[in-house]
Length: 285
Image (cartoon, rainbow, N blue to C red):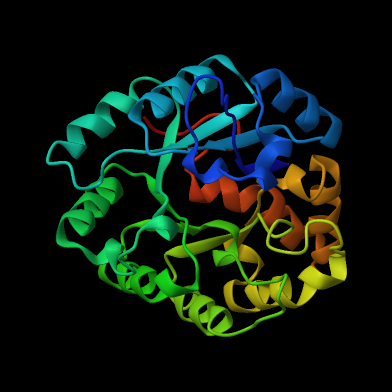
C-alpha cells in the first residue's frame, strides 16, 4: 500500500500561514519521521509521498534529504517558483538531492483564480513536464476551470488533483464542485487523490456516509484507474486518526474489484509519480 499524500512539519522552526487560528491548535506541534514511521507501520503502509506545506525552497531541500535517508518515503512533492527564469536548473539541482517526484503550489490561496494560466506559470509547468515530474493541483472549485485549461494546453504534464478539489462536504453543497471536477476528469492527463475529505466534513460529527456521494462522483468521473489513496496526515488528525482515515477509504471503495482497489491503493500512485515496480524508489532523477 502506498500513501500518496502526507506531510511533516515543525512549527518551532518555520511559519505555516495556513495553520493560523485556534481551530488548528490540535496539530500545531512537530510531526516527525518517527511519528510517520509509527502510523504507517501500524497501518501496513510500505511507502509514502511527502508533500510540501509552504512555498519554501528550503523546506523542499530538507524534505529531499529526509526522504533520501528514510526508506518509507518513496518520493517528495516539493515547491519551486514556477515563474523563475532558471526553473530548469533549479529542478535539476533538487533532483540531485533526493527523490523528487513532483511539485505543488498552494493555488487555492492565490487571489487570482486564473493564476495557473499566467504565461510565466504555464512556461514553468511546461518545464516541470519536460523534467518528467508531476504537478499536484491544490485547488478548490473556483480554480477548477483554470486547472482544466492547463490540462488541455499541456497534455504532456501529469496533473494530480489533491483532495478531490476539496468538496464542500460539511455544507452538503454539490455545484459548482461536481461539474468542475467532471470537466477536469475529462482530461486523460489528470489523476485524483482520494484524500483530505474528512477535514472537508464536520470534524466532530462526520460519518463515512457523509463522504460517499462525493467519493462516488470522483470514482465515476475518474474511474479506479485514475484515483489514488492519500491520508493527508497529520492534517487529518483534526477529524480522524490515520487508521480511521484509511478504514474510511477502504469502506468507500468496497464496491471495487480486488484489482481496482490495488490500483487505487498502490499502482496508480506508482504510475503518477514515476516510482519503480516496488513503489519504494523513484525510477528517475
